[in-house]
View 1: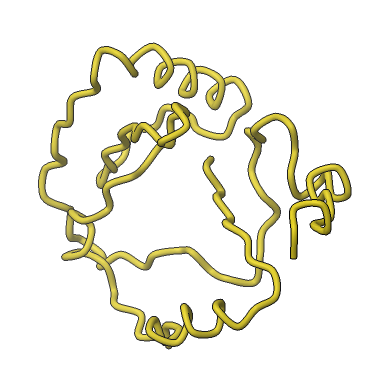
View 2: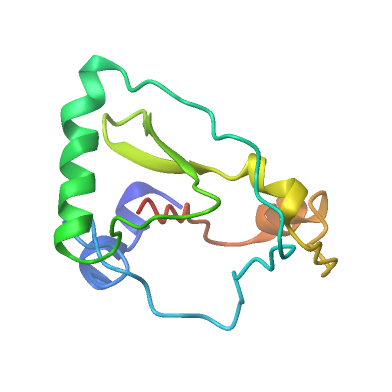
Length: 136
């Protein structure tokens, strides 16, 4: 398949490939992301991470935007999560949450996880591939 044979997916599917990064909550899916915590236990102290000077203003802007859209809000919590920015190759910032300290107080859920070694094999056989980055 040559470049000229490749359909212009970006213009054909603008909902899937928006021009501007979407900063709103996605629709709920059938997956339940709720973590059940052991009652009466609290997580160990959260790690204090520093934000690099060159990304601090962009990080602060994301936080302010999300607060304005009620995606996040200040809240007093027993088990806070450390959130930190990761600079992507294209210069954008992706926010990550460090949930490691919550492992000791989470009720384990032993649902089946997809076979990780089969995923690349299955994808390799596909006619079209896509990188889905739900950045925010």
